[in-house]
Amino acid sequence: MINCTTNIGLPNIKCGPILLRPLTMEHATEDYVGWLNDPKTNRYLETRFRPQSLSTLRAFIERQIENPTVAFFAIHDGDNGRFLGSVKLSDIKEQHRSGVVGYFVGDQESWGRGIGTNAVGALCTFSMRQVGLKKIRASCYSGNLGSIRVLQKIGFTQEGRQRYQVEGPCGREDILDFGLTEHELNFENFPAIIE
Image (tube, rainbow, N blue to C red; front, side, top):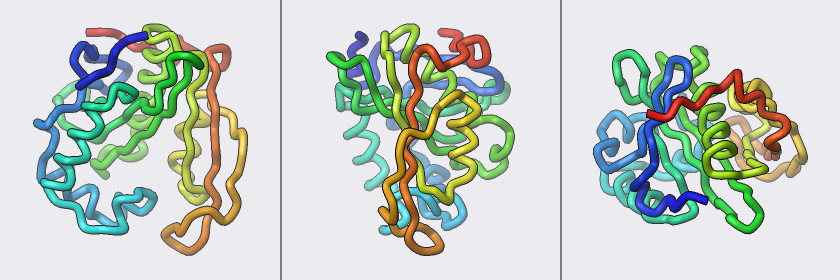
């Protein structure tokens, strides 16, 4: 099991059109804050309930990169290096060899291009092949069809439904719980090339 403390030692990971880099304070930008405050971008994020600023973003990033049970990556365009969003593996449980994936593509021009799918797929491949995880979980709002499609394309299976759990953009929504085992991920579809 790798030590994710402060993201030191995490590699760059290439997969299709994206490059994952360990997320650092350099990623705390006005663009990132703008994504978090944009109603179209944040409609399924918990950040939408309070205004975000550079200081709140920096505090969040600091908590994530200092947490030894989190591997936090920035999603970059593999061709031009543009910062597009983030993906993280959290709640890493060494004894159970499991974790939880979360992701966010903030750059709206990148939506519908497979950025989220490749980022999550690459992180799952890395987590299972390099870190040794056997199971990865994810959750999303029932109305977040884009997120559901990302998980299904990678091979996640819906394992549960928390009914009427959250306040969504259009009213009460369910939370859908998904899981992926090492036997369900097609590693060839999401090669995690370590750089």
